[in-house]
Amino acid sequence: MAIDTHCHLDASEFDADRGSVIANAQAAGVRAIVIPAIARSNFDTVRDLAHSFPEGYYALGIHPLFVRQSVEADLAHLRDALAASMADPRLVAIGEIGLDFFVKDIASGEARERQEFFYVEQLKLALEFDLPVLLHVRRSQDILLKYLRRLKRSPGGIAHAFNGSDQQARAFLDLGFALGIGGAMTFTRALQIRRHASDVSLDSLVLETDSPDIPPAWLQAPDLRNSPAQIPRIGASLAELRGEATAAVIDATTATACRVLPRLGQALSGIASAALDQNS
Image 1: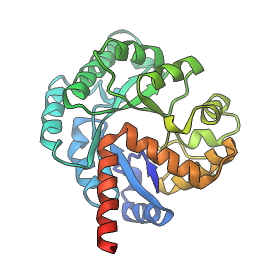
Image 2: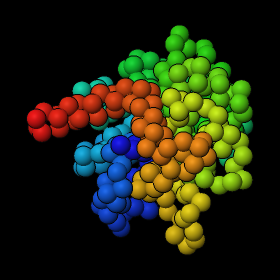
Image 3: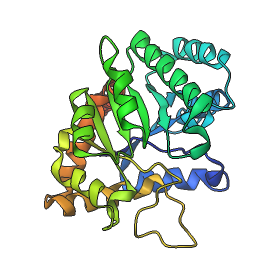
Image 4: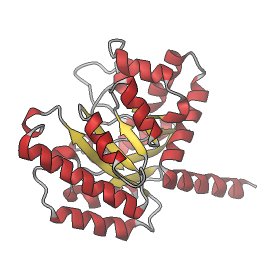
């Protein structure tokens, strides 16, 4: 059972054939797809999309690249949306949240301060609702860690598309995070990511696509759109890199996803139990 822990399935790139994309993922053996929100404007969209197919799950949050067009009232709306969705087993995290210091015009000054404010306020919501977070980590590892360490406890979750140092990786792991491994790992030139993929224990790694972005090496132009159906092959590439059996890697990363996203684990466990009861 493979899990795509990070897929922007609501993106416009999927508007023409979203149903086929989902069907292809199902056929490939993907049993859960986590769809993170990026702004108040798509909270309802990701929730409704997750409920439209059996494997759908979602997270609610405000992405750092969308902070600039957000207002503080959106944080209150996020809190209300989380409160209204806590009884929904398909809500599994707060996300996508974090910091992005790669994009130059939001990496300093007032724009950076605004990113940090929204990040901290969403961390507070994670503790209030006892939810893990899906962290956007781009040239911002140390500042993300600084604010996590200031909390009375870490919410845990997933450091999405992680590409930091060994020391930074260990710091996230110590705070209860797993590292998201996706298409970037399949490129031989991605030395640092491949080192993490090889050396970090499987109980701290999860699979992700970030679809439609971060295509794996085997997707060639002009068709570079990533999709959740790529997850099993990404898992196989991870297994090859580690010199381990693909099935064992898929099972282990699935178990990790269920651990760091407990509501996802509970939902999948419930589905498995229901299937056993039905077949007995």
